[in-house]
Length: 308
Image (cartoon, rainbow, N blue to C red; front, side, top):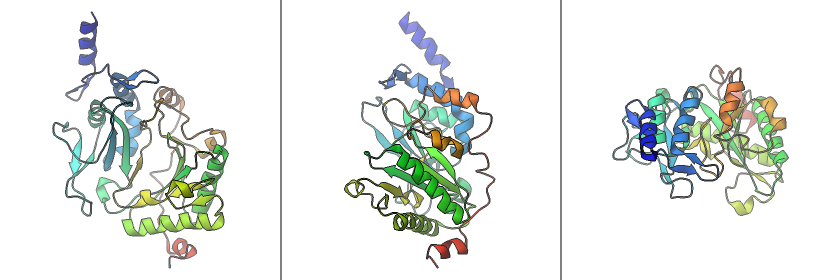
């Protein structure tokens, strides 16, 4: 009976010509979340996550044996990979190998078949792979810091970006921290965008050196928040909206409205089990206006940061 039920479940978990193998494999032991559960989760969030990740270069964190087994960071194709996961060559990379992207639900299901627990997307679309379309500031706190310090930091980054003429959006990363993301009209190249992000991070440190650092070394982070601007460099990536994290309990990266910040108690307010209920309740995208924003790095903004 068990073998029969498993076979039936396996046939049921097929999509786009791909059949899920080992659907009973437990990926998140702490919550008993299986590979089949991951495929169902991906199917549920597909309309939401594809809005943000489709046709963008991606990097993957895969855990074929589950969270307690080995994990792999993958940026390029491997033998036997589904053709639903597409490839694109990107000039200026650290290798000539093509990078990965997906277009639709078939690709998302193929990632689940590969036990992909994290999807990170680059700051560009395939349409303009040399022109970033966002700024990302990853606020990564010292583990001893109370979360109210992180909330205050997110508000301060938002205010600074507003001073520079940029509207921004809030993301709980599914980890310790928060991302503040500003969409950009894709005009400037990687070097200009990274330099601009670095200048903003340094401005935060200059305003409050007791609260912020741009040094990634953990020993320099005691009592501070690391303002990670390095995610704005060529080939760098950030966890995409609605992606699970390869962490105990299956936390998820979630886009939030700024009004939700004051009630946020951690960088991981939702999990693979609780997020679908949130999506069902939502009447609109928390990042409504993200794609319609028309803003860029202006001469005035650069001048105010001492870049020109």
